[in-house]
Image 1: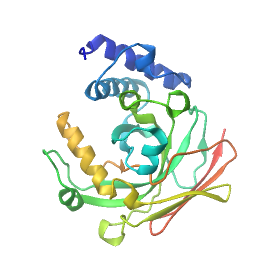
Image 2 (image 1 turned 90 degrees about the vertical axis):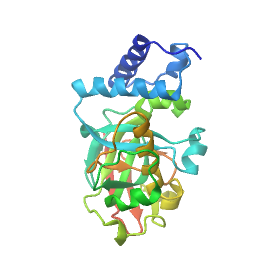
Image 3 (image 1 turned 60 degrees about the horizontal axis):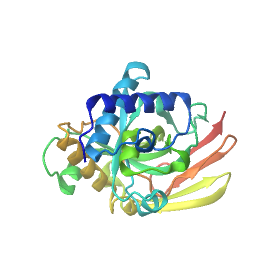
Image 4 (image 1 turned 180 degrees about the vertical axis):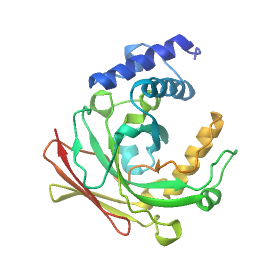
Length: 265
């Protein structure tokens, strides 16, 4: 495969950035620009999208990891984890209304968020090393919103698109890792009081901390550290479920704090 020129990466990044602001669903950029590119080049494009957003939209606030559960792999037909960057304007908190003004076709999924107490920057970090560096965990909801029609994309296309990042809702109650069993944490999804989905912590990469292992190792390969104090969304415990204006959404957790919000215009 021919190496992608830097100018082409910037052109695609600018297109994706503008598409997000225009709230327009598009075909895959690999099809629009008639190009093939590698996973590494896709992250190069994502870096450029993030840089453009930093100029106008605010500052990075969290990492999200996607495609860590069988439910999401089956739903999207992409079989390896990916990561992206959530910005500060995308974050809200339990019981705050969620406005759909910036979304195209949003979907929600319950997640376990992890915060580290020490930076990680080393080759081949292990599960035990990540567990030893966890400061706290808490419940969260990711609102994913792909720029692509029908959430249909290749691995490279979704990575370039900052992995469908568009929103997150956090609980304000945090737990020490030794006080909760995140492996067996059970989440249920209710929309308008109807239970529509459920999943477990063990559905996320066999353990949510394994998602952090993936992220730390992926960042190291790109010469970046995984910093302490930054929330890490470890991936959907269920598939992503669509929401619309007027919906009342509730995510219940076994031990972590339940999260509820109303969807507004």
